[in-house]
Image (cartoon, rainbow, N blue to C red; front, top):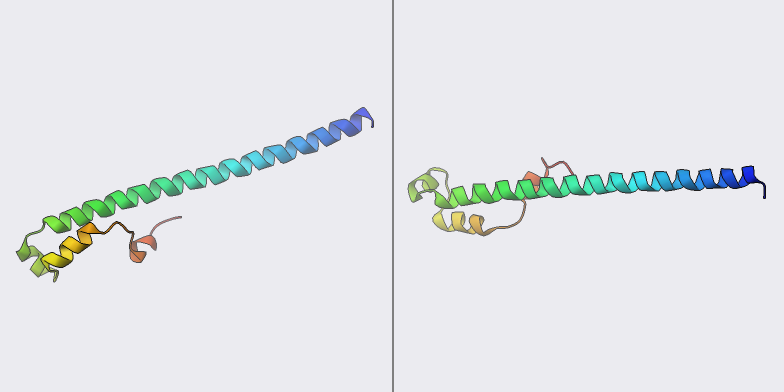
Length: 89
């Protein structure tokens, strides 16, 4: 094999390696951003649920929620589908 053939093969392997690394970094960045957004949304929901649980019975009655419903909502850990719709994956 000539030295130019070896050089061409090395360059193509290097290009493939750079592309693979670039793709992996893009995937990693996506995962990190998604994870951070998910954590931020979960913290926001937890704060809102704590605020709901802290409302007086009179205020809950004003919004049509019973104390039991407020406490059940406060215990939830999930992200409602309606909130996921506004979430950028």
